[in-house]
Structures are given as structure tokens and as C-alpha cells.
Image (cartoon, rainbow, N blue to C red; front, side, top):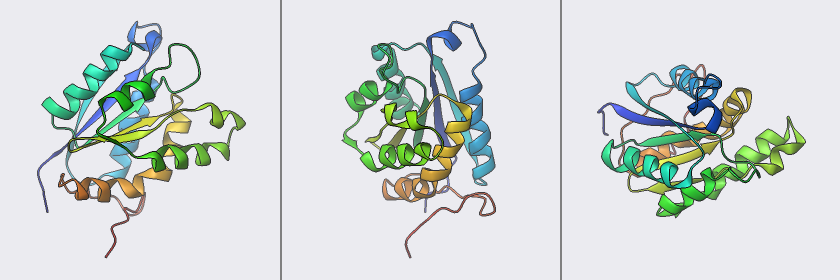
Length: 177
């Protein structure tokens, strides 16, 4: 069991937030949610970047390869608009895709909004990093993380990453016996 501090990448992909037109509430929502979930020590590696595919790819590579993040969570850029390229950037840098994450997040979001089917968020593995695309709205971020996070610690265990301990009163990590 690997007990070293986990590094978690949080990447907000937004032209307007990165230009300072509005505050990045989505990145903050991810950090707040992870603080609620995790009792083990972890460190946030936060990035705020525009919707530029080469820059998203470079940022994901840097967080996975150079920073050694076991988990990288993106927000934004998953819709059908021309500049929404986060899933393409994620696919370009991943060795293998994990389609179950996107499937479950869309199914969860559909309980709240019919436009969930417009989301193209996905997840994949790069080296020892799990990369998950989340929607851009803070409320949807929490709904999606609540749905998929129980599987995240075990996925990281299987990649020999740090042992993520959850606050069982908030969210239960599922680890098969």
C-alpha cells in the first residue's frame, strides 16, 4: 500500500475564465468536493487554461508525466460547441480509454437535465494517471463526482498509485475484498 501524498490535477478549460472575464467556480467546486471526500493527504495541482487543444494536451501530459498526479480532473469543454475540445485532447494523450466513466456521468446528469446527452466527457489512463472529464457547471460537477468517485480509489490502487482514503460519511470508496 502506497502511503505517499497524492497529487491531484485540477484543470479548468475555459476561454472566458482563463481571460479573467469571470471567476473559475468550477475548479473551486472540484477542490471543495475532493476536500469533502478525502481524508488522506493530497495536494492540488491547479491549472486554468483556454479551450486550445494543444495546450490542454500539454497540460495533461505535464500533470501526468512531470507532476506525477495519480488523478487529473478536468472541467469544461465537453459540449458540442466548436471550441469544446477537452475530450479530444484527453483521448490524444491517453494510452487507454475508460468509457464507463462518461457513460455513468451522462446517465447521472440525465436525471437532472435532458441536455446531458450533449456532453462528450470521457476518461482515460495515461501512465499511472487517471484522467476524468467533468462538466462545466459546479452543481453537475458534484453530481458526476458523487456517481463515479466510489470507483476512483480502487482504479488508482490497480495502477499502484497512492492509497486514497475517503470520508465514509460523505462517500464510500468501493474496494473488492
